[in-house]
Image 1 (cartoon, rainbow, N blue to C red):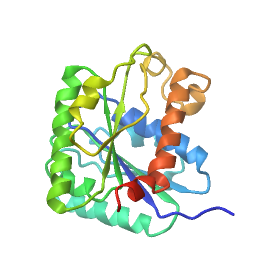
Image 2: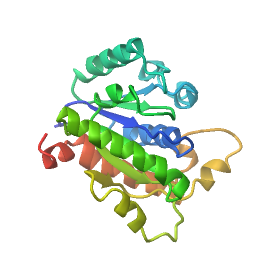
Image 3: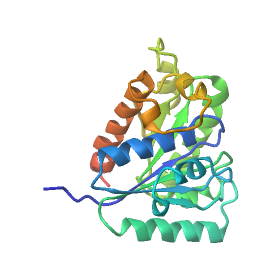
Image 4: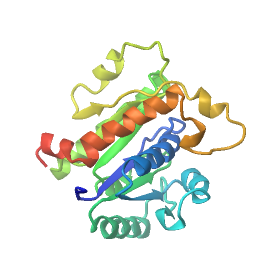
Length: 236
């Protein structure tokens, strides 16, 4: 018998651009969609560049992909539309929503973030990426405390990490005072950057280390986020 679980919404965000939000969103959407075939998966693209939705629209059923570009300018209309779309979709069990976002200040984006179950925050270990990422995470944590909420859970994904990297103490030190989960890392994106024929999805990377790492991260999200385990741990 297939187990029915409440719907989940997964937000990919960071005020820093170029950290891999759209790439992770697209690949994880496809991998989890494949792993959980009994779920209904949806992707909402709020990034003004609309990279994820534009690429996936030619590959996935049109009803699964929505474009609602708002980015750093989350106005009342955009937030209201997204609020309604998320709530209406998650009424049904076994629905998963992936939300891609653009770079920019947190601002009113937090109104959207509060609607979600988890926020995936990719970052490399370079100071250029870590400094704004830390600011972003602290702002989310402070607003969660102000509103007295436990969601969204903050999951940091060490991204574009050298395969020889073993020391994550700099990242651990940055988030030691915040309720943050450090997810399994993703190493260099060379296999993606070297593809000159465009995005073809997971079929194009199967058998690679990159695919194995993405698969491990997807399994982590299924076991800890989609299953509700983080909600149980944090008493939500």
